[in-house]
Length: 385
Image (cartoon, rainbow, N blue to C red; front, top):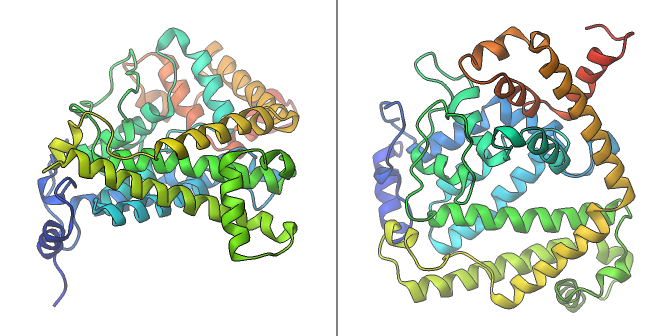
């Protein structure tokens, strides 16, 4: 006999921790839908994101290095998949709802513009007079409005829990009205949303370190001065006395395992102290239930500062960011000067909202490749429009 949704939900109820969100207790969707016979609501959320066009576009959106800089550097898609793997491990170890965690993680960067954080900075500066730009807010707009899935409703019609996890607590709300009701964030984030958030931070710091080493932008001797890096190197040398050149590709793997193990153990201690008896109590806890130990968190902050000074501010990375700023700035100014240059369907979707809303939706949805091609179409007289 096939395992039905009801059977999956019953198994969830038995196996998940008391503080986990259970699919059968979901606050539901904006537009009610019949239950699926074989998938829970959070499994359906995950699957809808996986099949979204915005998700596929992530493969051509920069993490740090544009796609044409090399085949092995990470992009937004590989980053998202790596975060999902880390987050599932943590959720499984802590008895949280893996399906909800995965749905949040897979959707968390859908609103990220092209050219990585440089692109986000450009759009934020250009939109300062209109509430700024934040990719979490834009990700929610993608799943709530910009994706086309059904004629009955806009967006993907995800559950309230997934939508709240995408937005994150502390996100600034835009001045313009969101096209559908915003999710109720309650008193605090769910354990699942907290897992997604912390695992995202672990992934991007460690993977940027790996890409920086691969690109020869980071110096092994300089990294050796970092407490977290020394800790990972000791663990690696305990396993293998191989030469440095063979240790380099593997130190990031050890570093991820170190951080994830600490996250699980530290979070388990926090949960034991708080003793939440339900997801609602977990959300209302006095401190976040998911987090690194104080010592490892301090060492990770040291790594983040090192990456800021020696990687993100490296002249090659700065040059790539400057290119992004010129391309996106030119596109924005061209569309703002004459919005008729936007495709008709873009203007139609933003009807009733300020024109800058249509522009940011269009630009933020671009891949790096499309943005460069569009720049040529608008500014190169020899390129067909």
